[in-house]
Figure 1 (cartoon, rainbow, N blue to C red):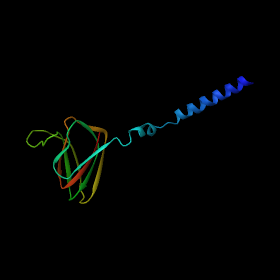
Figure 2: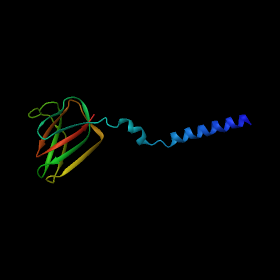
Figure 3: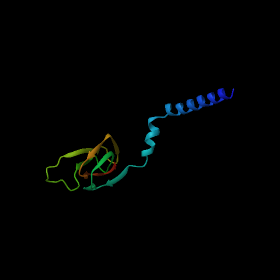
Figure 4: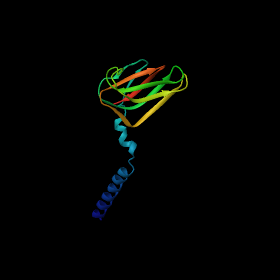
Length: 126
């Protein structure tokens, strides 16, 4: 009789442990990364991030119609150097806001230089 009780307790324990693993969702594991994204903002042409990074998102705030931001893979001003624009983000409506999510994130090898026209931008990076 005692052996049967031990067996039942062991089976019940294994069932509860197995159900906990079975019901774990993707979001449960991602909670460990919460708060690990940095942010940088600017409303003028400047270096936003001075080293290698991954950009996860960008938010553009428009001060005028057709505001846009050119993001270069560069830690310095790219004018006249032949460097190409890596990403262009923008908002067409004056005083509007547009959010861009990059999934997968965009890799910048040298840093991020922003060329801002009529607005401001916030970048989320790691």
